[in-house]
Image 1: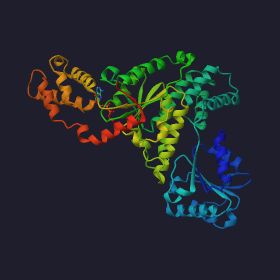
Image 2: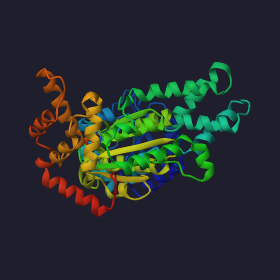
Image 3: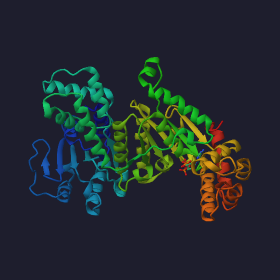
Image 4: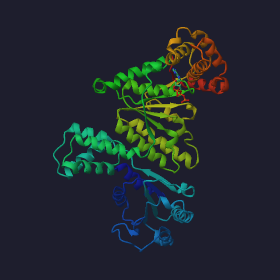
Length: 497
Ligand code: ATP
């Protein structure tokens, strides 16, 4: 039982909050909670399938009653006194101005002192602008490992199954991470149905089902691993840090016994095109685990609440696949605008809260690599110690780093020309170039030399390409300077030596 939700709900009802939106699809569980917190108040229910029904008996109060008709019924004040109005699956009606205005009418009366609470229950969160200030959103919290274990043990007992080894219960608990109680029960029932017991074999089934459930959301992408740590020129501090973490990560049990904490993850922020993504990819390779990319832009759904659902699904999938690296790209896109006014800001704030809680409590081997171009858009709570193991700043490459980046990209395409190209000359001419721009220059030079039927790529070909390039630092000089000052002020670790 999710006590914190029950407590919150009880408090909100007691305090006279007009509309409480329970964002969940665990209807059965919510029914139990509502009953417990109702304190003898009468409960009227409306749902899409049965219309206006008595909450206790689930029999119709009025036959064929639409939501609008039900809301009309509730108009006289005496109808509303000491009541809870439960509206299930009404999200589809919340863009209907008539319905919204009727709900608003009731909410206003509650604000004026009528002892009623409207409780909306839906797994899709739709908050119409007009109702924003009346609605308080409540969500089912993530279940902790202990709560999940308890659900498994209860299931075993209820079904009279043979006792299951503690270690297997632990494995099941990891597999169920990120799922709701309802989903866990269903999967346990499914696992049990095939041979009447819970065995290690069922873990596979759970994993497949879980992956299926979450893949449908389509917000995570599995990235093929090609880049290694050797493909990164410079950024020695960051690379060294990854190498150390990889040692812990690959020997997790031993490290834990030694007293080492489970690595959480890293935030890499800084100038575009300087190897942030490259590092995420190389890290997964180094850790020898899959890389999942979470696109924060895609996560932000069109509907209020969609984003939270998406985040929850993405986290659940990552945890199902863990050990893995979860690469959260363009972190600032999702969390910009926190603490501002309006519905959008509220969504962002909640999304951010969910993410922080997960980062804080995460005990699965899901290593987060978050990348961001502009940390000034990120909320300070995220940058506080303890959320990430470390925050690195990636700046424009130094001279020696540019030399290495040139070597890497020439070696990739024209290893035979590596010796004859005078890299030191190129390094001087590319002050202010990013790694991506250096790569672009090499690509250009190689293509031009080929088109001109040259036998090999020469230094001058690369210089020509450099002369044709307007580097980002030229175009965005002030912005980049401001950015690097900001990072210095905040004392983030420099990814370079
Ligand atoms: P953005 O913020 O625009 O996504 P980013 O910092 O993530 O940029 P990357 O995508 O990692 O930059 O870099 C783009 C490409 O530039 C890389 O795939 C790589 O080929 C090259 N590159 C950037 N930095 C380096 C580097 N330090 N060493 C070698 N190649 C680099």
